Length: 70
Image 1 (cartoon, rainbow, N blue to C red):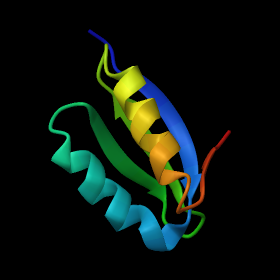
Image 2 (image 1 turned 90 degrees about the vertical axis):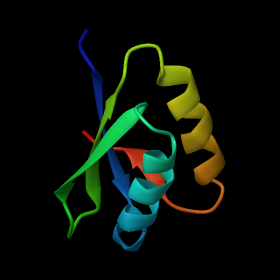
Image 3 (image 1 turned 90 degrees about the horizontal axis):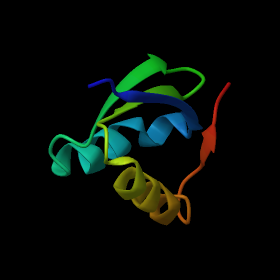
């Protein structure tokens, strides 16, 4: 099975927090920092977990900057 890859731009001060949050949801996503200065991260989402990840992201967007990156 292939993971779904999505890039996001986040507040760079919140990268560690995001990683901590998603590590708590064991196995749904891995988060890799692509550019720490620009706050670009890569989410590799496990198949079938897209809805859960989207729900978490929508909740987190209320408090921190998270936007799709190209």
